[in-house]
Length: 360
Image (cartoon, rainbow, N blue to C red; front, top):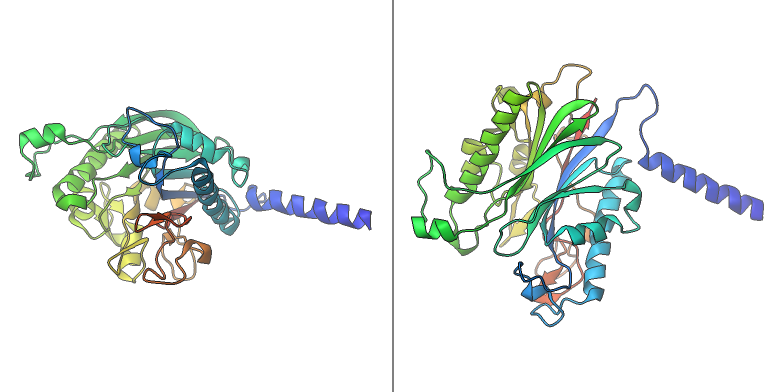
């Protein structure tokens, strides 16, 4: 009996390694590239440089170590579940609404995802809420070359801003993260953004300027590294069909519409088909957007390129499992979030994660 038990355990361990390992020789290699808004992943320590008062033990949310550990476990559970679905952990996972590097170090060390050996690219930013964006990457898949934290500014010749000059000087929001490296030997860059929110009536102009900054920088990267593959991801606080993504990010709905200086917007078709990554007042939106440049869309055979996922032929995935969904009450069917009406309910995030699959 003991021998049989040992053999069974050994089989499960080998199966587990196979699930999260690479492909067999001769098969095409796939890479999962995604984004997840972690909904206020704060630690319990007071940081004078951050607006973290609500997330302290004596703050509004009574943010205790028990709640923090539950939040970490929940985030790791979702990442692990995506890995189980895809047969591998994400190669690149952009995240937003994180307080600092410490919370990411705590996250990547969670037992559910520690095997991925995620490394972190993060810069402390100027956001008034105290939240940043970051990138988690697998060093066995992606070789980091350099990175940059790109600040938001109002230096646009195309956008007439609603804020006056004094308000512009006082305005602070998340920087945009650019990470440049090699993916399967090819030049690759990823941008992670959390564009200005709609709270307080903030208009299209701020998010359009954020998109304009990303697009301009991406064109510079394409000139510096001809043929570079580029992914833009983030919580854009706009849908793929909104002006920021269409006019200033040059997003296109259909692959055949994408020119050399355009970006393919996989989640545009999904939004039109009724899918959503978050719900507000009963309306589904896809703010968690991923776009790819023409080089990644139309790569020749043998090159790294985006591929359709699933039977419906979409190029993007909105990941949701029953445990991530509110099962009853007023918000039934929407993302099972951390807080509801100011009360801690032990959920995951108010956004579903999104991802694309690259193939070579």
